[in-house]
Image 1 (spheres, rainbow, N blue to C red):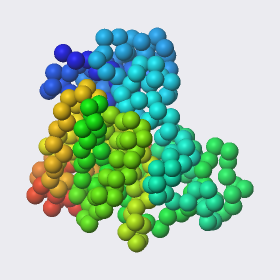
Image 2: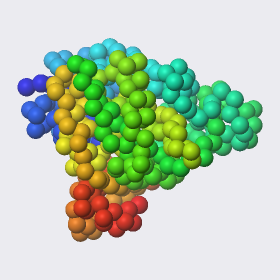
Image 3: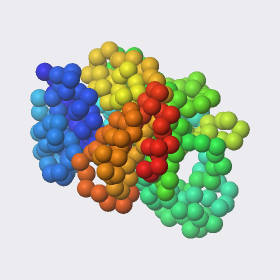
Length: 330
């Protein structure tokens, strides 16, 4: 029975565990919180992500080690031979390094070297869910740890999930249309209507090739008014915009990530229409959610607080027609 070590024990780790248990996999997680959501699906090692002793304990006897969030110290991932490799973290944790990676690979982005003003200042590190962003009127307002980026007049936000196995087998899920509010993902809908699938897949392939990648990778994109794509960010992990795959695809992103890093054949990414809604800050009564025909509810066993993702609900197939009723909760 294969053992998978995971750096991080949040809801993504928990969903990896839930996907892997039917395959006979066992899990060990490293997380600083004794209340980590993933504790319910595997052994929990409590402590810092950069503790060498605990990293050795995490990796002891593991067939593979992976990570479930992108701010894992790259040195920690390297020390345990994590898959995806530490280079994926090194090139995506700093927004400026990431933008230069996009540019080097011929992947269009918003202007970030000499952007028109006003511009959007973004923290180069640790910015997520809209944190670390502000509008500036002058480059003199830019901090040393910030990146100035052109304000993009985009039509919609899209994302593409790609998965590549250690054997090189590659598959893509359909492009997803995403709705954010206050910088936090609220709703994902797939398939995105008239999405430039081939262009998005080409950009993702360039990243997979450059990074020597194995596992699930998420590419976040802006679609501009003229229909062209601009890369926003890349996440070297399973991703919130792919949670719909649990019920909406033949093989979920979580199962395919595990298959990929273990060198197993990838599962089909064929899918049906789906809408996923995040539950942010508070959770409506369960009976109200389950009263929506076709609702698939996932709660993360996390304490409520403003802006925190506490769960998600997915509708698939014919049930997508009830998505307005579900979206009313956000």
